Length: 395
Image 1 (cartoon, helix red, strand yellow):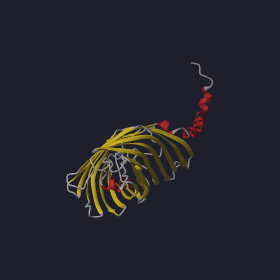
Image 2 (cartoon, rainbow, N blue to C red):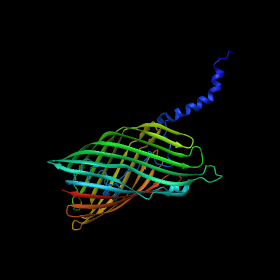
Image 3 (cartoon, helix red, strand yellow):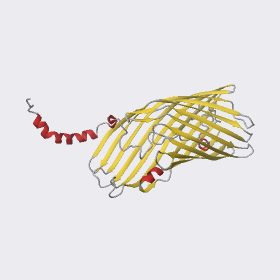
Image 4 (cartoon, rainbow, N blue to C red):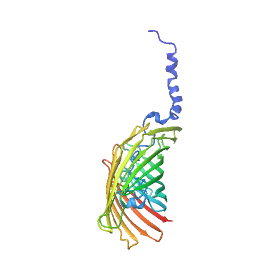
């Protein structure tokens, strides 16, 4: 067989061509790899899983059993709050016991302060108008640890990591009553922002900083119904249901490596599929001063096309209670429940809520604590605590 005369030249310069191609690969879009872009991985972070973040101290204290009741507009736009403004702040503390058990000299940031949720309610005639915003996904973490040991199978290194996963949802709800039934609809804007970063000191040529971020937004909506209004009398009850269309999100961002061996910059992109969320809540007055609540809900699975990960189908149930005597300014709340999500690193979590509220002349202050026991297969239980403070001012 006759050999092509160009073959020896190609063979001779093949190693050089490979070396020259490496920078081009570094700048190639990471989404073409059809995998989460480095340094994002399911060991250091829970992406794409996320437990529901409470938008108010009341929901935190009820362990989210009031989500679809219609007392707040976040998950049921049939809500008709009093004319006024409400704002919530959250202090989040995440304790990653799974990372602590696998590494040495583990240290993590004790707490983060962020925005929880809020709304402005202005009834107009027979209509209720409510502008609202909250963060249904909020997970912040920062830690550092020593990985591996000298002579072990894993090269020793000092690792520092930071992760931020947040989703902001803002909407305008319109509601109206028809006898004992109140219905509402809302248009919503959803914004997703993620940032993940790892710094490694190991003596390896690959040591250095790895960073990836991506964000995107879209428009969706929700609708809900509320049957009967809560009254401070025995036997009074309220039912609420809500459903939401979550839009497709196309996220884009940057992947940056600043390593001992090379520096690189690439673009990343992916698409999170649209989905449906729905749920129902109910409350019942056992006595005029004490009521019980129950809520159950879920959502369908969503693929992150381009990252080759899946946020599986999820469900949540919880029950709660509230004690309040109209003659007293204070209110006591509590709740307990469970969350489950398929196809994610942290599939199960138990939730526990506790809170207290205090009324003043034209305002009130509510404090709620939501505690999560987070389970990873084969790892110790981690904890996610959120202390939420909500201020309500009527006008």
